[in-house]
Length: 121
Image 1 (cartoon, rainbow, N blue to C red):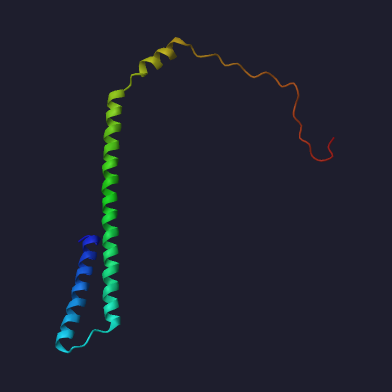
Image 2: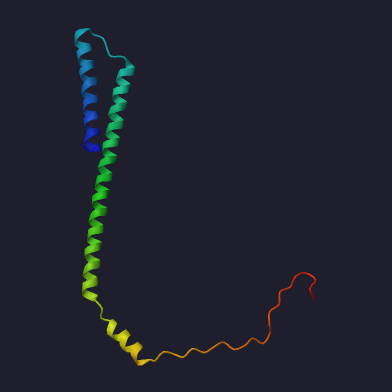
């Protein structure tokens, strides 16, 4: 059972128990449940409801991201199959028509470098 439905069940059971206990005690003895018990039941209901809503929003967001990812993958595959290697022939023809340039060595330096260590001059 997912988190969302577990939270919905907790909220429903909590509200049902609180209302049932209040009705039974009210009709049998004419008394009420202690405020602490009612507050605990209402707090559990509120927390479970918020948790169910957040879990539902997370599930929806996850579905949207998955759908977007699948769409993007399909679109990229379509572009790849459409584009293919149309430029390969052009690049290979260009490279074959231009011979490799010769390597030219760098000329000698006119000034040499020296390391300066304080008072070495």
